[in-house]
Image 1 (cartoon, rainbow, N blue to C red):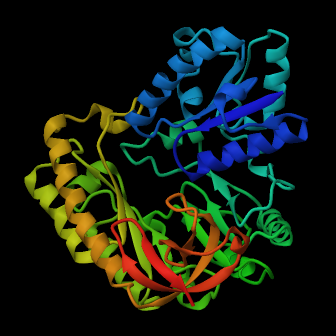
Image 2 (image 1 turned 90 degrees about the vertical axis):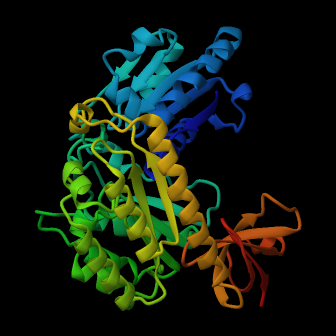
Length: 433
């Protein structure tokens, strides 16, 4: 049968979809890239933000029409399936199967039962690590690959649903990760991104090697040219990890380090576990270890209790650090979280006004940073054809900046030197040297 997977959310969800696709292909099913052509539709969901939930419900309404017309098998996986396991089928009775975040290894069982008209569900306890050990290998030739090194989170930030839908932290054994990366290198993968809700706490309280030690081992693997990781929690960013940016040749000069708010008062309400002065100190150490490092972050605007001073503190932090980019959002209340019970809600209109103001400031900073790249010769990993021009190809610098330049698709997977000729708000343009 032909299957289609629609994915919402972060890179971890993208990788979970890759894992399910791999298991289905091994079982003889064929992937398609148009929902209309499929016999099986899997919607891999995210509930971190309210907007993702709204988009999911809207999509399900459209899929129902297709199901009524073609009789496709329809399943829901991921965070919403885990979070709403007691109510989702009542809301959407036409669903054929539900899999929680730790049960994607059972996708073949779910499809088999669904073909027999049996409703299938599995909300395996989040402590079950089976999904961690799925290794999507033998797929089409890839330039880049995700590698999950851990799942879950122990931090319980007051706004975050992740610990409730992903469970406690579980780390994969380092030997298993190293073996997977070696296999990826042998298959032609040039760049890996290590995934975890908080990679800085990898193997915390175990006898296995630490995250910086894992990076050092992966840095030795022939064939892998670039290493990235997401996501880091500032409170767990160690001196040893910071030093890696100045010592490991394959570790890219880019870190994603969410600050969430520039106000110590709001950070305390968020249960983030650090102060702004501590955050700035770690940023300064990163820049000292690697003077060319690009820094991106996440930020929430309009958190309960945020007043004008708190918001201005956030703007001041952004102007002081000058991030290369920020993923910014207006706060949305998440069920089960502590923040859902906080008083002093910020009116939605005001939160959106603040978000727009912040994004305008950051847009100018990002443009300034990108224009500063003009004239530089940078290493670019070619990822394929550009979406904007059939005469151009696209790739990324080690700083994780998109570059478009003239070239043929046969260059995909190659590392080339490109002179940056123009910096834009969201990308760079260049010419191959």
